[in-house]
Image (cartoon, rainbow, N blue to C red; front, top):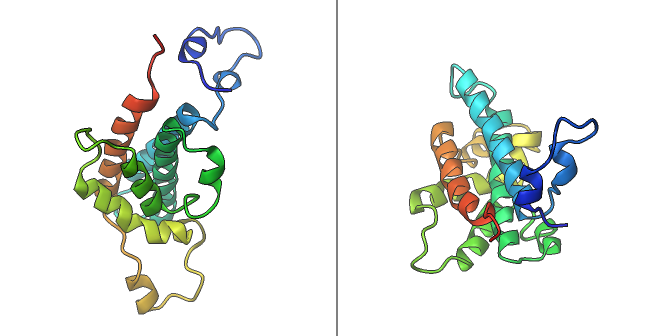
Length: 177
């Protein structure tokens, strides 16, 4: 079932048993986008609450990467990429591959996120794909292992997330005529 923005906005949430979740499926473009915004908002709230860049590093980046992944998938779903393609390699968790696939759907004169934000998403892709932020490194940490993972500053990564969300929001959250 595709999300109908009119039906969602007309819900009477004061009725017992009626929730926003009952009207929204999270498996279409709008649902994936709304989940993405939630993850990115959570990452932003955690970042604001941390007094140092390294505090709660992995949970913040895990939320950020999950939000970026869902946002990219929302864009692809909006472009009629079958959901089954997004649940298996190479598109299931690889931010760089997801971004590349999104760029295939952007016309040369159409605005998308800037190259600097694309670079940040690409920088996050290796660690995100190996689930580093969720589970840690699979081997005992060494200088080589740690140095092989490049992580952009959280403020820069959040800015890339905001830029991506802005573009996808305008494509996915469209009122039907």
